Length: 254
Image: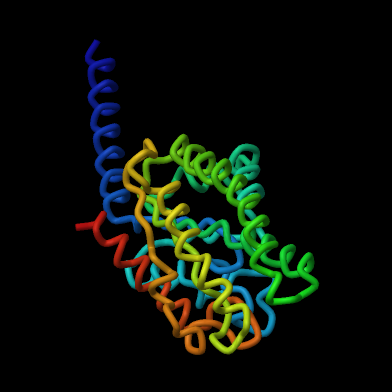
C-alpha cells in the first residue's frame, strides 16, 4: 500500500512539474501572426529573385519585427478570392496554420478587381473613352463574386480561430501619370466602401475584424509607395502597410 501511495505521489509531483514548465513555456513563447493573401503580403518584386519565396521586406514580416511576433506568411501571388476560399475549405495544412494564429492579416480581392479592369481594357479596345462603360459591367460581375467569397472566407477563418483579423483594402496601384490612375481612383472609394462593409460592417456576424485603410494610406504617393512600371508596393510602400496594420493590431494588445 505504501508503495502505491509513493507512486501516486510521485506521479502527482511530476504532473504538476510538467504542467508548470509547460505553462511557463507558453507564457514566454512569441505570439504568432499569419498572413493570408496575394502578391502584396508576399512581397512580390522586392528582390531580383523572390518568385520562389516571400520577401523579408513584405509588411507581415515588418509587423512581426516591430511587434516581436513569429510570422507565417501564406500569401500566394496571383490568388483571387476563389483560390483562398478553396484553400480554406480543402487544404488541411493551410487550415492548421490558421487555427494556430494569434493574429491574422488578410489581403485579398485585388486580383479579382485587376481581372475586371484588364477584361474591360481589352473589351474597350484599349480606348479610354469607352473604358468606363465596360469597366462598370466588369466590376459589377466582380462585385458579385466578392460579395459571395469574402463573407465565406471570413466565415471559414472564424470556424478555425477567433484571432483578430486585420483586412487591407485596395490602394490605387497606378502612378499618377498613368491614364488609368483617374479611372481607378474614380471607382476605388465605392469599391472599398463595399469591401469594408462586407468584412467588418455592422451586419456581418463576427467580432475583432478591423480595416487597414491602404487606399487612404497610399493617397497620391504612388511614386514613393508603388514600384515604377509595376503595381506592387516598394519597400517604402510595404513599410506604410506595416505601419497601418500595426496601428490596427495594437488595439487588440493593449
